[in-house]
Length: 480
Image (cartoon, rainbow, N blue to C red; front, side, top):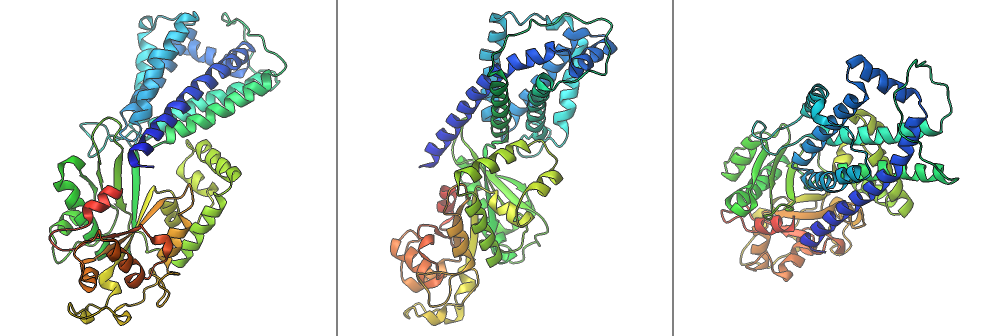
């Protein structure tokens, strides 16, 4: 499947999820109306709030509607969520509101309740403003991370509380002297509880997927040393920045990126995250790529084994459904709670398995003994130094190194896509007496004779040069 096909599939899945959400909402709304008419605790609390504020029930509805609208608008403005945000806004304008009007449920004049509307809007701005990077004022991309969390928490919470209110028999502790008019009771059949339960389950699950989806491909880098990753990031950023169609933007660690792209002999020390983003195409549905190095330790054999275990757990349909449901269910939970419930090998492994693409850097200058390279000599195995991240010496087809293990583990579905980037590959092409990084014979030589990697890495090796021409970096950008 090509990148464009994958992109279209993403949009179709989001549109399908939105249609399913609307269907589940329509089904759950009957249950919510019945729960409201039971006059339980929530009913009394809402009316009490309306009386305390002096708004009445109509004012409370206006307050809640404007608050949710603020969340939806911020959700649509988020660069990572704009596709599903626009779909959601379109569904509200062209489906939800007209349906309410046709059914005679749109009975409130919003303009008659300016104070509740202003308070709802102000509360929405406060909620989405925490940790936000707003347009014009923020640096880099526009981000409203709390918009998705709050939208999911509010809608999912209403659905769950509604089903509890509907089917949990209890005596409300609040005694009401005077009730406001109620909505007409909706009749239900013997299968109503099951339908309600399925509707709420579907709404919470699908809304979790819909709000969690990020319109950015997350590319994470692992390298055996800092200098290799700094020079690779600098070269990749320089290539993307010089090509205007990529619209490259530095996000973090700009001093490292600028020093590396200028090929300065002494690079700043990497003390935190270094990242940039680029857009591989134009148009509204062009998905951004964010390439980052999070200053994490180099991968080890233990990481390869742990990723293989994760792939095993994700291999069965039941496991995939369970992990997906738990991930969506915990969307609005604090990060500390998510970390507690997530079975993993820690933050390092989490960063790898949650990425979309992993780039494993293999510096050819570290693998080859440069002092023994002779342009006129034939290649021999004595020039290769064994490294734990490459294959075992003398086992050219079987592999056995850390990178081989990670590539094999991620070859299965639901795992990140993995590429091995051979930096300083111009040293290897000198030994092979070839003139192109794209030569199939050279790529096989690089994989089997130099890096000693197995057949799983075939087609996964991306050579780049540290010379002025920066050969190979355009291919890496295209692969992402």
